[in-house]
Length: 251
Length: 251
DNA sequence: AAAATAGTGTCTTTAAGACAATATAAA
DNA sequence: TTTATATTGTCTTAAAGACACTATTTT
Image 1 (cartoon, rainbow over the protein chains, first blue to last red):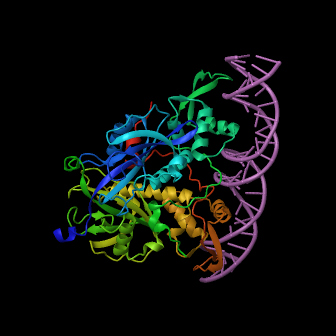
Image 2 (image 1 turned 135 degrees about the vertical axis):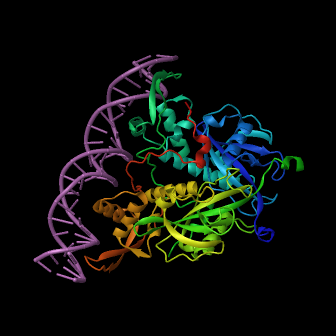
Image 3 (image 1 turned 90 degrees about the horizontal axis):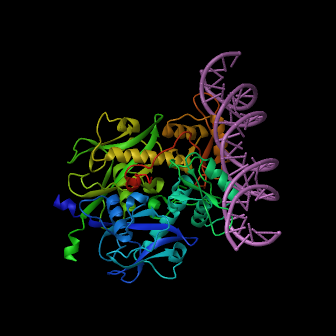
């Protein structure tokens, strides 16, 4: 066993959180400034090491609470494909399992233990390359955004970007911001209100500063969306590491 | 650092392969009989430990080659959510990353190094509970089958179950077997041949023992299927560990 | 009344669902 | 000709795309 075990790799696991929200009409991600080496001072996704008594989902919930004060029961954590390049972490062999979390528009994030600062940052800014992210967090964030876009097509997760109650217009803005497109308000309204279990009218209305007050809805009971919400013009290839071994075409 | 590190968990990673194929009109999975403890003598998914010089995709390719002699370039490996229960492996802390592989109808599998025997087994038999699978491989296999079903809806992966060339009838059988439904041959034909990049006619025909010979096709260049292939009556909830933290409703 | 935002109705187009008859081979 | 399998055509229905007007509020 000792002989064979030399081939094995003892390593540590981390979870990294891509916490997305819609603020100021943009898709934003929660970033921390790293207080420790490596990559001290760089922006990074919040995350941390897996502990002995917890599984990955538990670690993700714990990190979420530590970094944002959010109870995972309020959120939606989706596990993404692991990143496992042997040289992705200068501290040694560390494989990370990223989680996508969808959050409603939150107050200012509270700086966590491991972070000197936490802030919301527009995703396209973070991905622009104007300043680097620690580790391979740029690839992870890209994957998380892609997954969020796909989830909007097939599930009712868009309601998780909103508060307890919301207007159809707010929900449409979520789609427009996450997809980066504009949608026809009439067709969107029809789709949302006629798809069983997507939203339920709550009866009351929300007054704005001006204009006609909008009717309020709450999230319905359905999880999957059938038929799916269609997004125009996306014929994507399978993403990076998740299907690494399958990228070659069959001839 | 030493103090903090006590909280961390040093562990090993494995990859497990759910290699699916269609044989004898049934969805089948490649199982090995475990030659070593733990679970010696039980059926299990092929798999093994991650090594120091490889990433997870590389480990999956290596295991695939070792267990089946298949070159990963011919196959399609899809990473599934990790299984990380602290007590899932009696040998200690082992987290596993499952991969789904789609294979054409293969000859008899060659027994691998770690296995005393390898065989194809119908998936519904393996999941029936009549005999147990090692570790949490029953849950992994369930997840793999669900993923395969979903992939058939949204991608052209069904062609990977077939050989280099195939008939529309063979492709339809793949859908029927994996989904466990029956499909209208006329509508299926229309959908497949009119969806851009799904299949390309190869010109020749394949003669059967009897009946009209079927035209042969090869896989097209498209990966995603737009519009998606619709499966009736599936309103699924998010699966087990992948969304463990999200199972609670928001209320 | 004017400005601002919310909300609805109809026609067209696309694609799926539901049906049966014809074509091509071997025996 | 019979048998067996492959293939194709049409009508209906569901839902998305495109489009403009009406409704409700504040100022």
